[in-house]
Amino acid sequence: MPSSGPRPVAVELNAVLVALIDDEPQVLTLEDGALLPSGPFEGDHPTLQTGVRAWVERQTHHPLGYVEQLYTFADRYRESTMGYRIVSISYLGLTRERAAAGQHEPGWQSFYRYFPWEDWRQGPPKILARGILPRLKSWVEAVSDNARRERRQKVDGSFDLDAWNEELVLQRYELLYSAGLVPEAGGQRKKPVADPVPGEPMRYDHRRILATGIARLRAKIKYRPVVFELMPPGFTLGQLQRAVEALAGRPLHKQNFRRQVEQQGLVEETGAMTTGTGGRPAKLYRFRREIVLERAVAGSKLPLARS
Image (cartoon, rainbow, N blue to C red; front, side, top):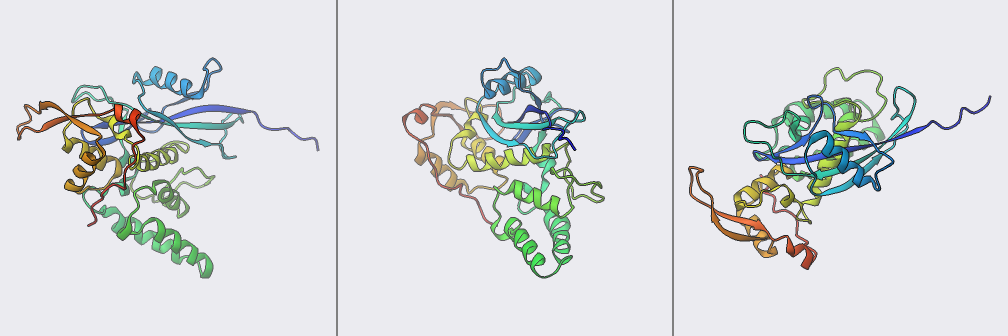
């Protein structure tokens, strides 16, 4: 039988575009939160990053600040209705949301709409003990011997409530997919998930791409000052702490956080104070962007509070 030859390949670009809105980490989406911004790579773009900037700004009217390539998704199952194999090159982008208060675009969605078990700012989410861990336990016990041991190790490694690793966003999501508790992680599941755990699904494998972006950002804020790409020109140390907490999904020890920021010399006072907030005025700071040019800024792990 003659070979049909390799399938044609289409290259598309995806963007995980993040902003902080009212102390919430939000991602820009299309079609009521179902899709990440995406588009074809066009031949007149000199580089992929130029291409992603061009079509994101064209689609969303939001200029990108910090941008980095995230991952290339090229699994065999990714194909269009026309039979093309789709290769998606994803990017993580950070921007300052510019809409006036009360008039935010409907496309901005909280990280935790899609991954409610990842928000530990108020302690372990109830969904873990009530809805996820019991079902994962049943999944572990549904097999025997070596398979059970392997499943238990995966669950213990990803969902340890006493040693929660906030960077394992993608591993937890894909484990829940393997256990049949969430849809659309990227496999060829023929039947829909009958009773998924809470968390908004997305089309195709866009929630998987989003999980990859959140994990990358959570790791990045520990050793590079990218959080300042999301901050206004002037901010309080309290606002900065809430921003990092929102991205990490974990509470921070106030004194340790401020000591770390001061020791690294990342910020300096602007000489201005907050006004009109109804509370005690607080000093405003700015990011010392020039320090990045002077030296490589490397920090220790975030001083995460343990409950």
